[in-house]
Image (cartoon, rainbow, N blue to C red; front, side):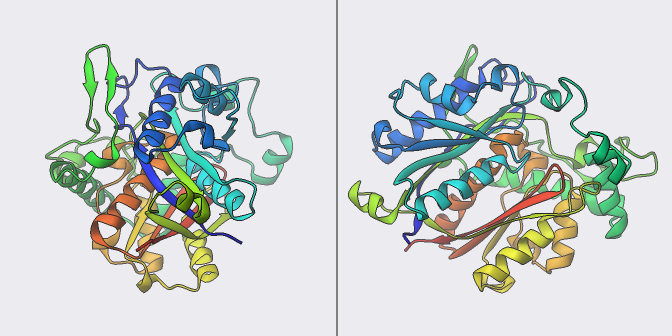
Amino acid sequence: MTNAVIVEAVRTPVGKRNGGLSGIHPADLSALVLNELVTRAGVSADAVDDVIWGCVGQVGEQGFDIARTAVLSAGWPETVPGVTVDRQCGSSQQSLNFAVASVMAGHYDVVVAGGVESMSRITMGLSGSVGGSPNGPKFQERYGVDPNQGIGAEMMAEKWGLSRTDVDTFAARSHERAAAAQDAGYFDGQIVAVPNADGTVTKDEGIRRGTTIEKLAGLKTVFKEDGVIHAGNASQISDGAAALLVMSEEAAEKHGLNPIARVHTAAVVGADPVMMLAAPIPATEKVLQRSGLSVSDIGVFEVNEAFAPVPLAWQKELGVADEVLNPNGGAIALGHPLGGSGARILTDLVHHMRRNNIRYGLQTMCEGGGQANATILELVK
């Protein structure tokens, strides 16, 4: 069985809601990163066996298998297929895991994994509301509620004893770290500029410099009057796309490419769909057990900041040091373009590992329905 390696990773800037990316059709946004990916790698598009693309709001402009539409919008040969994946917020991380499994099984030699979401153009939850609730009578009989992610975040804060100060401190830290990473130029090498009607978008738009705990303390909670969750300690509504080029080691050698990282181990779990957001904890435990590695072996962790209690509860359970958790900020500062977020984070992760010579990195994300993916990358020397 061959190893699957990542040879290139690229993303758009993350655009804020109704910001610089909002005027661009999500298929065209996807096409932009697809073309940049193969251009940077020096690989012809006709070498790609498949494009596996994450997208949550698969309706309207993001419907009808946007992966295939993106391929055609990119001007790639009609012989290149595409398939769209929905594992909610982890859709494009799942795309990578599917790509890796297919390469290791010998089904593909070269495959693109990634995803897109234009939340400015496709309202969050729209695809789940067309034609009635996705939670039918049997689901209601079993759980008695329609799960709400914000309430799930409040449940996590209560269960793990996280105060308003705890979550606001984490949120301020996310903006501070993202701003520092942007100023240091850490994102520049992974971003493709996006032209729009007003010029070009080259930087992530969501970072709020000077965010403090005191400023966040003035925001009203959204889901519970006496709760802790508000707009400032939750992920931002965003637009963006990202992609990774995955190959067998043999294909990378054939194309004269030096791999950045190999996918060491991947896992996915299901957990309580009502609390919904705690599954990264068992997902991390499972992927570590399967890999034979321990927490101390991992040099950097990325836990998606859907809401601040998610990484904070995860950190309490796993005992991970603060400095290796989301070192360049996360979705609270950078934004969370749902179906594109997994690939956005993976792109930052592989660039961070290469820049700092970190052998192992681990990424995990909470997902709608009470699920989570976890993936361990190993830097290729």
